[in-house]
Image 1: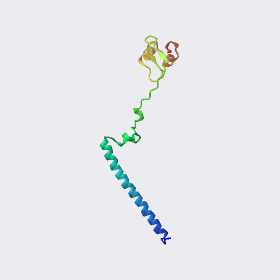
Image 2 (image 1 turned 180 degrees about the vertical axis):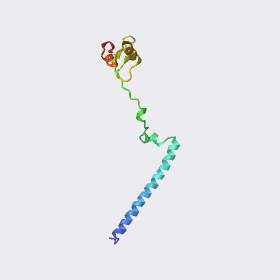
Image 3 (image 1 turned 45 degrees about the horizontal axis):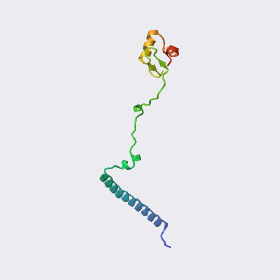
Image 4 (image 1 turned 30 degrees about the vertical axis):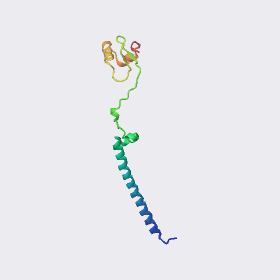
Length: 115
């Protein structure tokens, strides 16, 4: 059994860990050079082999258009145009409201306009 002190053993362990890190980085560099050359030769990129590594395209929430199909609730008896009752009332609804001098609430409960 050797007579090395604990501090000497710890220093050797530290030196060996540093050597492991150095060699690991060296191996990664060599492999990267080799892989890059092979990819270039084949006209490929790393993401062609590993698509999951491609950066995700970030889309702002304001740019997303989420549309849900909503059945129409109201129908113009003259033209057959419809409206779901969501969002801004279409022009045909506005025209009916003006002609008949009715409120939107009254329009919505009038059976004549139900789809």
